[in-house]
Amino acid sequence: MRTRELGQGGPEVSVVGLGTNNFGMRVDYDGSLAVIDAALEHGITLFDTADIYGQGMSEDFIGRALEGRRDRVLLATKFGKPMDERPDDSRGSREYIRWAVEGSLRRLRTDTIDVYQMHEPDPSTPIETTLDALHELVQEGLVRHIGSSNYSATQIEEADRVARERGVTRFVAAQNHYSLVEREVEDEVLPTCERLGIGMLPFFPLASGLLTGKYTRGVEATEGRLAGREVPAERWDRLERLEAYASERGVPLLSVAIGSGRARRTQLNWVVTGTGAAVNVGLNFWLVPRYGMVGAAISTAVAYVVLFVGMTLYAQHVYPVQYQWRRVVTAVGVAVGLTVAARAAELPLAASFLLVLAYPLALALLGFYLPAERKRLRRLVPGV
Image 1 (tube, rainbow, N blue to C red):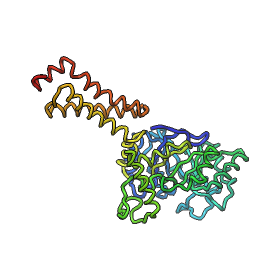
Image 2: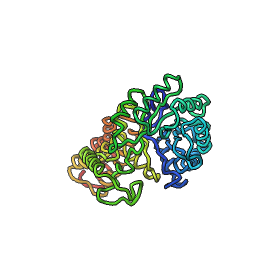
Image 3: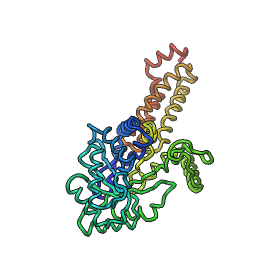
Image 4: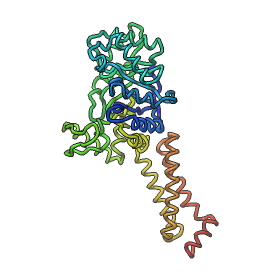
């Protein structure tokens, strides 16, 4: 998993993060633990949560699951949405922020929060007051970096100006709704963040599962976040255009959805939400290669083709089916292993292709000339 700096002077994080808004609500602790284990296994180091998720249950599940391995992840959490315990407070005030951060630290079972984000603006509190309170937390080591969520471009710019003028900690990240079917932030928010050196942590980058390809127009959704909800016609139109784009290039829709963010020159990190089961993490982060699944598919297909062609050319007739399939299974197994190794080493697509191609090509061109191989083949096929 590649990493990227989150904002100017921010932490180094995996380019794909794990959103945990389902933890404690639709996903119980055992399910959450399985998702976290799968995420860690696939190199995801950025975990995003909030005190409002399950009224603290998401943070609690994460804290329990990460005991003994807290140092493997970067924890980002949020405050500022109405909690049941204090629903009417001014959530940008110093007193409230103190209360909120203490609760998050306790539930997460950690001494420090890596990125502490204000979940939404508080119109009842001057931004100066909020930034001063957050700066105190950074000075005391309770928080390493701070960020915003659901701020407009104007609010992001104002917060950055105030922080610079007062000499206090600036926001390193902004978390806003962004996907290929919800692109409003591209108008003002993203350009503002790029200009100010602020990283973007999109939420709902898969459009609540719409961009996974598991929903069909005209068929009512019965599971996931979209169950029982009506999807606007213009979103279906955009989705169908994206599906056509992906199909023309031979890549999964999921690769397009995630890869689009990683290809941007801005400091953009995908936070994948709605991960309800460990298998979803595997599908999202293991089956979707860094350079598009088409690379691995082509390599494996070539392994088959070259092996069969080689057999036919050098033996001048087709070997017995039993012998063919033994060799094919071996070649494909090695090809898959080489594909995994190439991806782990983050080799360019061309180099990965050549590496995977090398084994079956060598087998086809050289293997049949070896005396031991020829002796074995003579026992199987008279006249070889």
